[in-house]
Image (tube, rainbow, N blue to C red; front, side, top):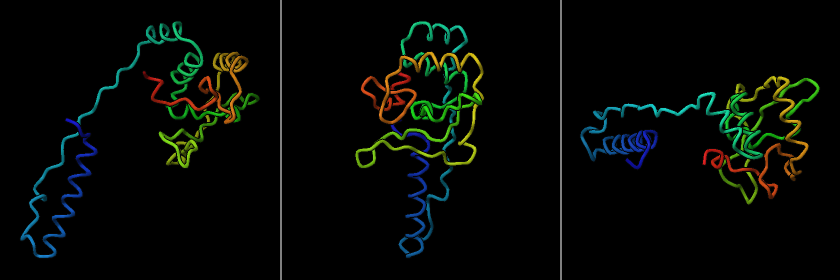
Length: 167
C-alpha cells in the first residue's frame, strides 16, 4: 500500500532483468519472474469541482489564488504551468498566453528549475478572451514585482510551490 503501480512495475522490471542475468550466468535454469503478470492499473478518480463549487471557491479566496485558480479552470493550464507563467508570456495585443515552461519540484544548485515541456504539444498558445484579459490586468495592477517576472509569486517574490495550490 506504500508504493504506486508505477513504482511496483519498475521494481518488477529490475527483478526480471536481474533474474535474466542469473539465467544467462547459469545460476538459475529459468527466470521465475517471467510468469509474473503486470499489476492491473487502477485509475484514481480525480474529483472535479462543479461550476457552483468553483464560483464558491473564487468568491471566498484572496489573491493570487483567486486569479490563478480562475485562469487554471478557464484555460486548462496545469499547476506547474501556472506558477511558472511569466508576464512576458502574455501577448496583450494579440490576446494570447504562451505556455512554454513549468516549474520543477526542486532546486538545482540553489536555483529554481524551469522545465521545458517534453513534447512540442506541451508548448502551446492559448487564446485570452475578454473576461480573462480583464481579470489578469486587474490582478497585475496590484501584484508585486518579482525578480523572476512571474505573473503569480509568493509574498516574498519567490515562485509559488504548485503543491500549495491544492492544500
